[in-house]
Image (cartoon, rainbow, N blue to C red):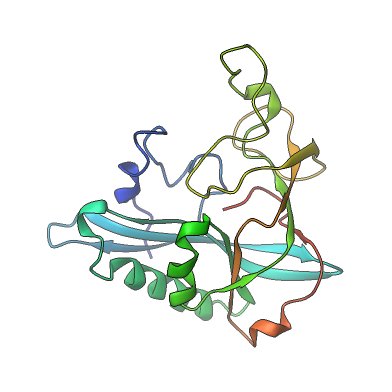
Length: 208
């Protein structure tokens, strides 16, 4: 699947700079892209993922960290998001090293992922902050904002400590972020959803 600059460049424009698949709001960029074009060759739907070994409890698990799930607003309601997702899932299954798809999202889009085969799990997730403290923009009263910045995933970064691994999107001191209760979903690729190991999750880098 080729890399392209999809419809997401128009997504979230009112709140963020144009979306760039190579620098997606500080999230880890995808290395694989499922893309749907319209008749004119314009990209109207996109799903990306990146293979990574993460820690779950006392186990190491290789996941397809999934993000950049976008459908052009003009083409919604036509099943294009489902098509892009099923294409991405087929590519995940073709990679024998991958055990699960893995993603975090906003609460309101959980039903879409569940409809396309994802399963919600309840975990504490540790990751590297998308926005280092040294590069955050102060609030109007001059105080630093909370760790991280709002973005399409929508899960707030709830606590931060100096990170020991991973590379953030911009220069500065990386931080470790813990999230409790934010939507996290997995997509089993080799077995049953119940085989997911117990325990907290360490993404070993930035989220997707």
